[in-house]
Image (tube, rainbow, N blue to C red):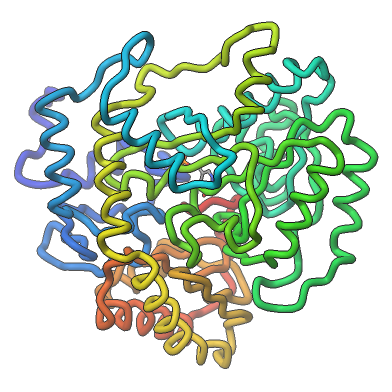
Length: 446
Ligand SMILES: Cc1ncc(COP(=O)(O)O)c(C=O)c1O
């Protein structure tokens, strides 16, 4: 058969997909089934056979306003017709300028410079590179290490991997290729529990002993996402800011998962009343419609970068500042205000507390955690994602467990009955689950 004849125009060729297409964190030799989605509207995904699933993932935490929102669709259609893409070297355009203005206004006063990158991982690479160049500009070229905390996840590219959890991440797999960074224990004090200051002793020692070679501390503020959906104490983050100031280390906050309201504040650092020197944004930036990320920094950092021997910041991807993605982001940021995101997220949080808390009494559930529009059931063993996925689809919802976690991060526009459908499905599956079944190779949200 010729290659052309093999294509199936009647529908999604799931067999071809299985034989030829990589999916995130999967094997091509032993591919897991993928579900064919033909369209999505509001909070529902529609499968090929007409089945509608209430989406509990916001397409990996990005689609905060739901799918096919007329405002974002119109903005993108108009932008495609006018200027879909143009190189950013030597050229600028209204969507990039307007988006940068909005981001500067929304984030803390110190952040005044914006680098528009193409994905979250790249935003992290850019942040790390900025920190390294900054110290070159400050004539302290030995400051090249990144300090971080265990259980973190910052992306799949090489610099980003170097700051992911060293045990549960991909460090062992890529051995010497992953730069050796400095890791402190993961924070233990829970978001709404008591703060135990003694948990700072190890990270304080790392600062004390290594500050002359530490360029930046890089952490996910308040919520460690793909590394375990853990919510830590705001006082811990505030203390990290103080340590950075004391030891002359930059603070990079990775708000790629937490930004734009997810944890109940517009940005998670607001829980701690602190500011970053460098801030990474992504995911919900475009409402989840198209890939775009941003790395913001202070005047001070930008000046240091310019004072480095290169004189310029050494990064510039082909699709930098893509106008189509910027126009989606502008529409999405406007929608956050128009839809009163705070009210939406507060309502989700109180319903999650009402409906999920009882699951703590189930035999296999070891913890129930809720913060903003994130609801997590932690189980006592690793879950079989493929098996549970089918159970959730049978229950009419799209929930994708990973590691030992069943969690949801729904779009903010979800209705109360749709949210109940998600929480009921979580409880049904958590109650009847058969454990253990070790199928997790490494931490990822795959
Ligand atoms: C905190 C955090 N940083 C970075 C990334 C990487 O973003 P991307 O998948 O867009 O490269 C993710 C993705 O889940 C993330 O959760």
